[in-house]
Image 1: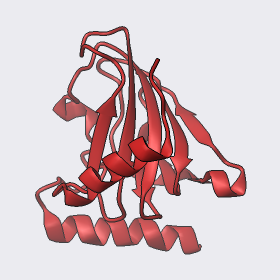
Image 2: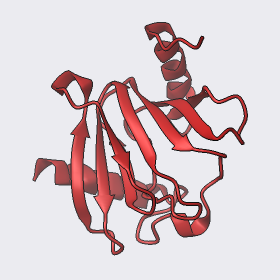
Image 3: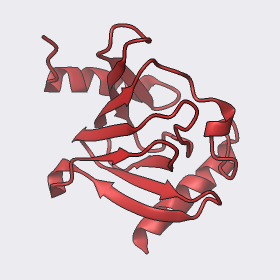
Length: 157
């Protein structure tokens, strides 16, 4: 039996805070080639989850927010926001399912945010064509900051 409790959430949150990327996974699937990947993802504000899609290979993705708050953005092929949703259990919004091939990203809004993620296996690192060409790369620090700020601003609109 695998238990998700406050102790586990706190443990991976501390690891996320120490990580240069400000996030940390805790896998429940035992092998990367398992047919279903299940994991906790501890996320801190200012982590950058580059807009991406799961088209090649095609995979739907499900996120359940166990603690904290995230904004989920969906984009068209040009990078225009077509939908956004705040997900937080505090307000009765618990998760989201994103179809394969849809451009999306998450913006972390609370310290100590932890999501439970479910995706079809086997694990496959994202291929370059699955990253949005209109979004900054992880290593472009200044552009990433501007992009994150732009996403924050759209939440105020």
